[in-house]
Length: 220
Image 1: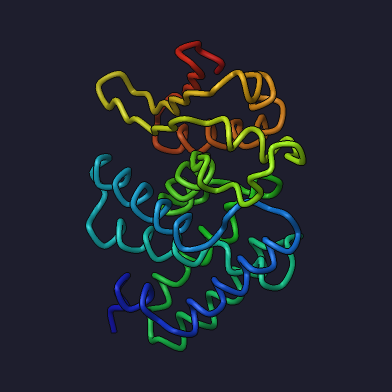
Image 2: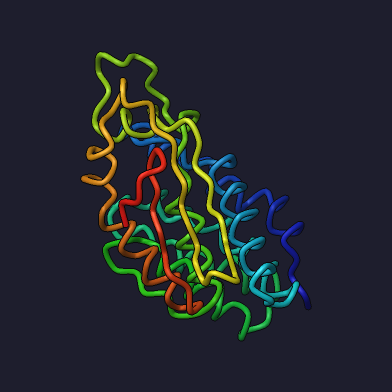
């Protein structure tokens, strides 16, 4: 049976876990990790694979992985990629997805956290780039800037973040605009260095060079 993104996106059980995971993140003071985030990641990961010449089905598997990638936060933020992968295996097996496709999706979910991730397949590499480039003001829950922590401040300062593939140049560029009245450019680089290095590895999986531009200046 071919399990589609539409089936996963509208599955009541999966979406209950996404809501529960985001509620846990909210209780811990983290930024939004709910349907807006996973939807943006799904669109970006699938678009990237299609632009690189991968099949429609591979792009759909990237959308499925992206929709489910943060459900492990329901268990605990620590090791959420690994617990989420185990949860995804059970859920997708229950839906009747083929084992070879489950393997790709589960590997991608298990390899999206910057502390343990490796871009082990195209789905994983695309998910890494999509997930780590989703920085935006609307992810910040706390709107009292007096009590912003550095993650709130950095996300709130981002005015735009665009992931741009240039196949002829062999580059993929995360182009970010930051309001430096809210946060310094170095604040972004300080807290997201590990993520950006992982993006470099994911880009290299596709034979691309990863570039980070902040306010027009080349950072990486």
